[in-house]
Length: 277
Image (tube, rainbow, N blue to C red):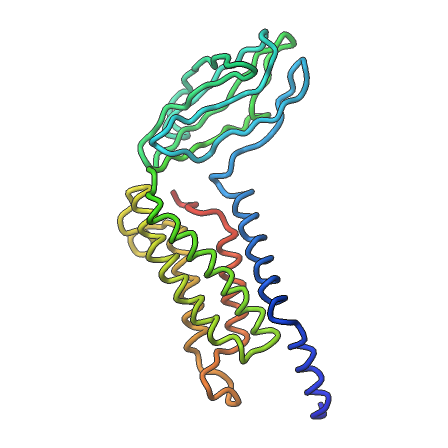
C-alpha cells in the first residue's frame, strides 16, 4: 500500500466526528439496557387474557421487594368473572395454595405472600368466566417471583450511575479502537476504573444489601452478577496493560483487546443478572 493510500484510509477511519462517536456509543448502551430489561429474570411477564367482553393486557411481576406487598392484577370489568391465585414457596417445591382474587373496581386483585430476601414464589392465575376457565399465563408455564430487601438510594444510584457511565465510556473506547486508536487509551483506563468501582465494589455492596449475600462471586459462590463483572474488569485490565505492537511504544493498548473488552462488557451486561440465584 502506498503512503497516499494509507493516509486516505486513516482519514476515512477518523472521519466520524467526536459527537457522532459518543452518540453511537450511547446507542449501544441503550440497546444493552433494552435487552436486559426485556429479557432479564426480573422483567414482568406480559401477555393478554381473553375474556368474554374482550382481550385485556396483564403484567405479572417476577421481582419484588420485601418491604411492600406484591400484587397480582387481572383487568376485567365483567362482574361475572372471578379468579384464583395459586402459589407455592420456594419455587418448585410443595403444593400450590389457592387464594381468591378480590374485585377492586375493574380489576381482580390478589397478593403474593412475601418471602425472605433471596426467596422465591412460583405462581399462576386461573380465571373463571361464563365461557369456562382461562389460565394466566397460557399453557403450563408458571411465573417465579424473587424477593429482595430494599437498597438505600445512597448506595443504589451511585452503583447505577457509575455502571451506565462505564458502559458509555467502554463503548466509546471500542469505537475509538476501530476509528482512532490514539484516542482509546484514556477511555479504556476510565472504563476499567468505572467497572471496578461502580460494578464490582458497589455491585457487591448492593447484592449484600438486597440479598444478604456477603462475599459473593468466585471463589465464594457462583453468583453470576459478580462473576461477570470480575470477568469484565479482567478484560479491561488486560487491554490497558498488555504490551502493544512495536510501533506503539507509548503504552496505548492494542485495538483488538480494547474492541474485545468493549464487546465483552456490552454482551455481559445484556445477559440477565443473578442467573445462579
